[in-house]
Image 1: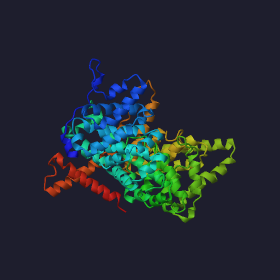
Image 2 (image 1 turned 45 degrees about the vertical axis):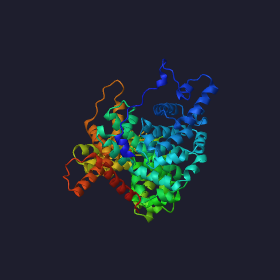
Image 3 (image 1 turned 90 degrees about the horizontal axis):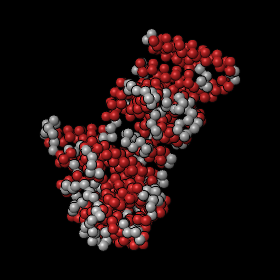
Image 4 (image 1 turned 30 degrees about the horizontal axis):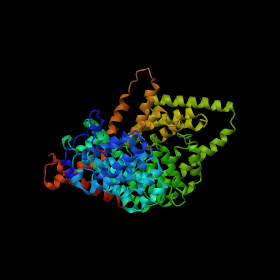
Length: 603
């Protein structure tokens, strides 16, 4: 069916012919005429008849017009009960079924659009209302949605099918109807989450403009966009396809269902890289599912066995990512579980130690105190991280108790001493004696009272700069993170953001470096004021450009495609620089997905 679609060229959806005042509609079952009926009872009766007869009618052009109109209504008025009560779900299910099983009908006129619109309409009406979801399930929408999820047409229809199934699985009353197909649904969602970026890239983004599936182009841009808009929308839709697949998996994971499938080691590792880039920042993506798994015994057990996942959570916990608290939450859950605690403590404790002075993080309060309690509950002498945990004890318990008895006069004396030592450190730094300056900054921190958070922030940030010059990226990240925890609000100190971004760049951590760099640039723009001309710093701008390419949503898919092309060239005896015809896409896509699936299901 996919090869047939590529040959079929269709034009954008035309305007509604019944909108012309001078044109008399002679179709007694016209949907648009029924919608314009002033009598409410006649209007409802007419719409009901249209829904019953739509998938049996012969007016192919009006099919698409009606579906396009219904799609717009469902998008703008998803809570309106009129259409769900008149049989829209049964009609949409029938249309999807017809499109899947009758290729001649699907490829006639513009019917190729219909399954997409039908699944989208189901998803929109079931998005907010559980009672609508119940009606949809009773109307038989799940089997045709499953057919689309299996890829019977294309990735575009899979996108709206997984969205609709995710809504149905999110309600208690309709979850079991989806769970009747649990094994298949979960396996399909796992596969989609892992391979959809490659599919969209190879089947659309990497395809020459004049060889792309035309109805995909029209759906992406509504028929009025250029190549740049197509690519931008394809990136957005690919991100949504992955995020909605993860959401569907979340619906099972939060009920401790299908964990044996979801917790495959290969897939858990892949979750760490399912970020979504700058396209879908409102979705927690892969880490959101990891968090759900951390709330279950089996999930924690499997995650604790994978250092890559624990390290990814640690990097997230001390980042400026919107989902920083998810990383912290996951690490704390792993440390609270006596069965996983000592499997992850060596990795998790150093990350969390940098965060013990964090007060508030968004709407989360006393974050540092919560971290401290968990860390101090461990037995520091029994592990390699004993020195790290002893540091927490000294900082949060011993020093706090000692400083409680200090008078205001003594505190001011300490503050003056700190200022003097810091000046000495600054002088050594200016002379190029970086290691000596680092010693002095550490000395200043040792005497600086905990209540002087701003002073401690500056000293930690200066230490981070010393570590950068000494090429010690890990220490620079640690100290700049501690500085950012002391800033108010958290993660708002510009110099520390820039220094940590540089340190992450030194380690090749593109995503983390990009996030900090963008946050730093935002701070720079805001500090410039609304009326002032803001000068964009050269080096941060250059770093952002560098990492935008490395963190592009399709970056991995692009590199895999290039590698697969080389393998095909070698097998076929072609010159690697020779441009290959586009009909090799299917072979390449098969190879790429097979490699991904092999990795995903590996132990």
